[in-house]
Image 1 (tube, rainbow, N blue to C red):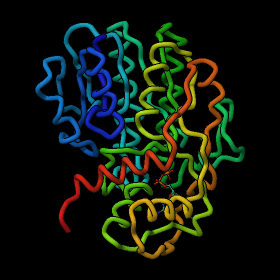
Image 2 (image 1 turned 120 degrees about the horizontal axis):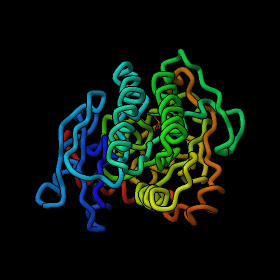
Image 3 (image 1 turned 90 degrees about the vertical axis):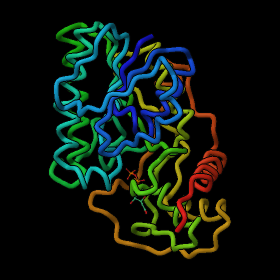
Length: 312
Ligand code: UDP
């Protein structure tokens, strides 16, 4: 296959680039490098089947030759990043999705949207099935991401209905692993960096809010199955193993061998109280479920952060 991955220099994007290159596919990665990093792609620059293009997909996308699939993964994705880039986040979700869909239509390629559990907002049902419409504050600080992704889903389904295009929508729940940015502000890199430096772990609120964390290799398996097998409607991809944030902080502290204290900071506005994917659809249609237990995935991630540590 010949693929375009927008956001290819990001955390998920770069893992997808790696997996498709390993399979023998031709991959073009596109990224404006606002939150992605070229260093995530450095192992692949020698590969003749790999091309990198620095481009913001809000502007017209030109890719020469045929394409079999367009995977639209470009967007700031952590709450700290989209608070920093509110308007670019709205633009890439709306205008960028439009451009990527237009390209896929032109090339007669399969289009995949990286959607998110954030489209469920602060959910009133737990776990969240794909049929749940969500509970989103459109004007809060998270609205820039949540509504952009909701618009992106609407646009993707409209292209499917209007043009009969093959589409995929992956609703991606919290994912972690090597190549997360240390400063992206999310719980996993924050807690790991704090533990490794012997600094206090910052738990927001009481830490009773929950998340369900999927190791990146499991997520990539799910994305590939979704791309290959459909269905054309949204599919939740995530690990249903739900933990409180306080439990997560304690677990990471223990695995990192740290004795640092846990301190509590104010809970950010609209922080979802519970989040857990209902993955029955993915199990049934894709034959997929996560395999890497939380402790093992966190262990590998801590190891990666240790190996790539910047001296402090
Ligand atoms: N969080 C925390 N301490 C941190 C960073 C995050 O307690 O240093 C909390 C955050 O408030 C949220 C959860 O951890 O309840 C997961 O946050 P993250 O930014 O990783 O992802 P989200 O699921 O909110 O997009």
